[in-house]
Image 1 (spheres, rainbow, N blue to C red):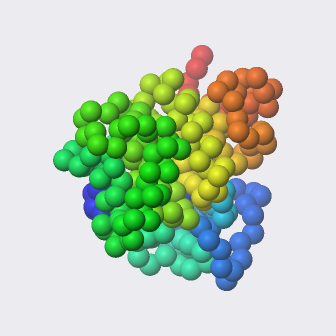
Image 2: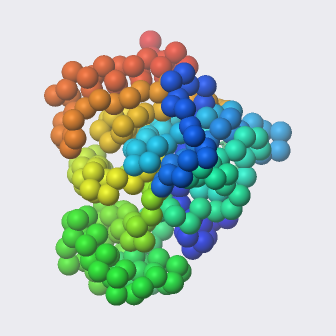
Length: 285
Ligand SMILES: Nc1ncnc2c1ncn2[C@@H]1O[C@H](COP(=O)(O)OP(=O)(O)OP(=O)(O)O)[C@@H](O)[C@H]1O
C-alpha cells in the first residue's frame, strides 16, 4: 500500500526493537492509551530476511527514537506497527490488544510531506476530517490551534508548492495530529530539511509533545535529533536489523538548540558512535 494510501486509510504508527536487557515488563491485559509492544517481530520478503527478530515497547506518552543504518528495517518495523504490513513472525499489541488490522488511533509523518498539491495547507489538514467523518467545526478549531503552535502563520490558503520545505513538513505534522491520535509515528520526518530548520522544528515538535504527551515512535539517522527529542533511543544493527542498544536519555525538557552544553549529551553520542563502530556501520581509520 502506498504511503498516501496508508494515510487515506487513517493509519499511522510504527516501532521496532530486539534483544534488549532492561525492556520494561508489559502487562498485555492492561488497557493503556497509546502503548505499543512488538514482541519478537521479524519480517522476510521471500527468502530475504529484512528485520529482526526485534522486541520493542513504547509506553503511553513516551517518546522513543530508533537509530539505525540504512536498510536495517526501520520503515518495515514502522509499517508493521501501523498494521500495514504483517510480521512474518512475532506479534504487535496496541493498548494491550494484538494488532490484526491497520491502526486508526494514529498519526503518521513521512520524510516526504505527501500533501495534496491541489488542496491548500488548511484543506490538506482537514482531509482527516473528511476521511474519518469528524465534526467539521471542532476539527477546524483544532487545525487552527495546531497551525498556531507549529508557527504556521498566514499560510492556511497557500498551496504546498507555495510553502518552504519546513512549512510543508509542519503542515504534514498538523495533519497527523488534527484528529488527536494517541500514537504518532514519524519516519525520518526532518530528513529533507536543512540543519537550521531541523533544529527549530525539533524544538517545536518537542514543545507540542510536552503539551500533548502522545506516544511517539521517531525514526531518524540523526544522533543529535534522537538525543534531543527522546526519552529512550534504540540503536539497531545492520540488516536484518536488531535492537542492540537501548539508551535512556536523562536530560531536562525542553532541551536547548545546542545540546553540546550538556556533558551527558557527549556521553550518549559517544556511546552511539561506538556502537555503530562495533557493528561495522562505520569504518573510520
Ligand atoms: N516490499 C518489499 N519487498 C522486498 N524487499 C523489501 C520490501 N520492503 C523493504 N524491503 C527491503 O527490506 C530492507 C529494509 O527496508 P526498510 O525500508 O525497512 O529499511 P530502513 O532501515 O527504513 O532504510 P532507510 O533508512 O534507508 O530508509 C531493505 O533491504 C529493503 O530493500
